[in-house]
Image (cartoon, rainbow, N blue to C red; front, side):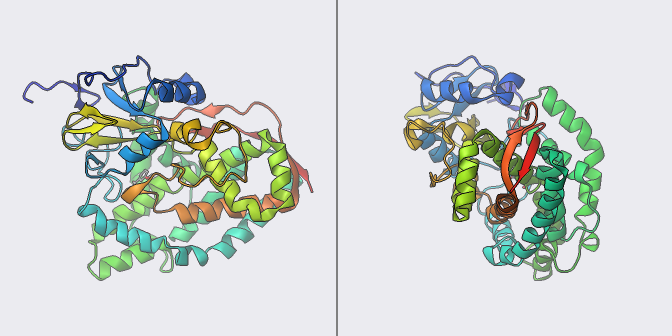
Length: 411
Ligand code: OVM
């Protein structure tokens, strides 16, 4: 251990006995822009592979990915879910006290967040979500041609989520960019991560200030979290960090989910017709969007002790990339048409929200946002057509569109 070699701030490992070795950079911008071939090859090479470029393991087959991701006892989050091992170096920001912790620390903060984002709370927001979506979609349909990333995918969550949290002043650019920073920071020290961290120097102070109790309304999700500081369930500085988690994980992800949904339907007009013919398919349609174009494509874990993956030995300190995007397209799980977007698939057990004790705590609110947007669109828009190139935006952990020029054909 004394002369342990580090790479990307984690323990450099030797290839585990018998494990396939793949000389690839999963964070190469070409792969991040168009990952499907990489996903397929990752799954084809085996349940787990060793990637020398970053001295990490990676899995993309559904079963193994799910097993590793939900095994919080062997594969911990407290050492960071990116490539840096928090045991061996300073994290780039004070760690999240819900994402980057293990039980027992995780249990208390998770309980507070679960309550603040419970189905009961989400229910109180759906009318506001629906009205906002109706108004926004009406305006955009009148416009006819839109740049759907900024005009809709970003604008909708920014119009509803920060107000739901209780934020009084909202800045679309800062909030969306902060999410991009957090997710790019999970990757290696590449150009994406460097740019994100440089940008974060300006953003982080704004974000932390926005998390203070006196900046929040008394009736929002943020106030609910602070109320748990009054009872002593958490400390006041923990409340502000949990509000930071809302802003870290709750904006860029839903922006991406909505943008990706629009892309799915522009590319599959027959599925749009089906949704319009039967609006009760909106919920399964959302799950299929999440499976087919998972907003979070890759998330890491660290082996907290010597263990095994798919029968191969894994030493303590090993970083494992769980490629959720690959698992969600695995024909071994979803069948030979895994690569088809079908809104009636009902893809039970998809990995877009993760799995296990760290499974997305905001998934109910995320679904509610997507439902509001798709429902309003299904009522008012007969066809969603591409109106130019729709390139993807490379990010070390998020699979999002950079631009999405669309024509909305009114119903
Ligand atoms: C957090 C956090 C940040 C990014 C993602 C996430 C998907 C959580 O700060 O707690 O979960």
